[in-house]
Length: 102
Length: 174
Image (cartoon, rainbow over all chains, first blue to last red; front, side, top):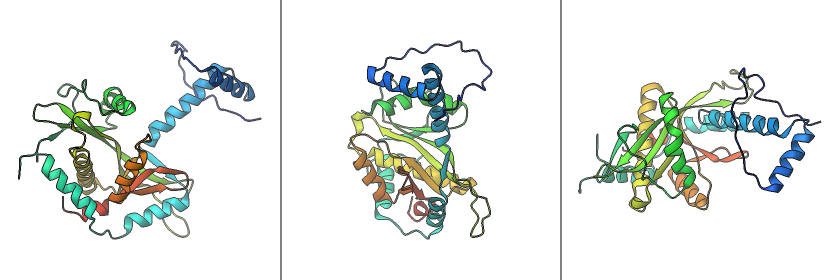
């Protein structure tokens, strides 16, 4: 059986707030089918999945986690000597033209 | 040379009115107007805004600290070390509809890269990371960043997250 972790169960807070959602019927059907398939009620399912997504999104601003191959390619790329770039030179020229120095 | 039309200041909600700003992308406008205050207060993010001669907010970008890490890999493997690598994350960048086409977006991108270089020179950061916003102008944005030298951080799984080595910025006169 596929499982979804109840990601909010460890939070020691009462469920004191409500959030009403307006859903397309087919979306609600899909959510209810999936929540039944993992043995959860729809409310817990929606909350758990959305809370996990919220955590992932906040973390993604501060952290990129890469498979080893991609990490090694990144580490190699940042160590390579760089060449002057016409596109970057143009960009900094535009900055000097448009933005006043402090 | 004519006098620059804009100035850039660190965003402060008490001094800078975001109310009239619109870049034409709802998600980006909402990010600027509704999402940043808590992050700034918590010292997770800094936002810099462009002001015109009348002091109107006509552009912005956001920067935060970032770490690039190897998935489930020991710091020291047989082949090489895989410690987390510090970077600067460009959280968003947009210009107001009233100034689009004037080159301010590119100038703000250069300003953001210059700030990233300052960070790199102060505490160390090896790259600038960003996520390309996906809408009908996605290809245009991707072409712009690719021309600047950005490339995908994890091409097979997340081709929209790009990086530019800080060395590429260092090689160009700011």
